[in-house]
Image 1 (tube, one colour):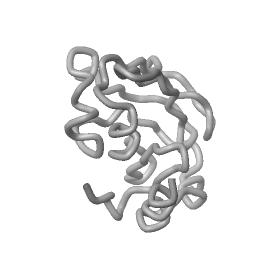
Image 2 (spheres, one colour; image 1 turned 30 degrees about the horizontal axis):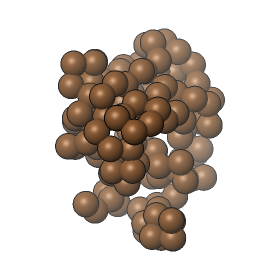
Image 3 (cartoon, one colour; image 1 turned 45 degrees about the vertical axis):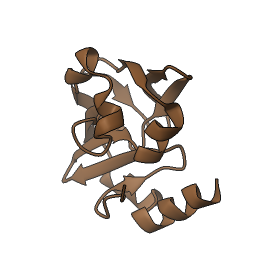
Image 4 (cartoon, one colour; image 1 turned 90 degrees about the vertical axis):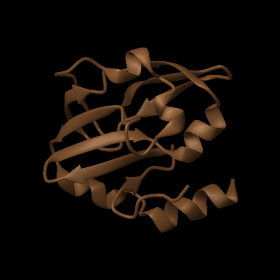
Length: 127
């Protein structure tokens, strides 16, 4: 799977799709393939404020439980409630319907500290 060029990525395997001051956040295809079949997702409550790097929630698979970190700081304004009943969507469409949260970004310039798709692909090739 290719990594969308318009997204930004973290070394911890999260992606962010920034549109103005709204950022959609999820985990990458690489992350979901390393985790295996996702069976449960714990997401923050709407209204939660997170700083860049804070734990945003957890993704549980048949193999492991993994923390998800906020790639960008701000206030959680929406969570993907579809994942409550269909957490496996993260496996089938991690860069689309498997998104986790929408954040109202406090400092959009934080995105500049994240990786572009080419840099992210180099990192996972080295793992």
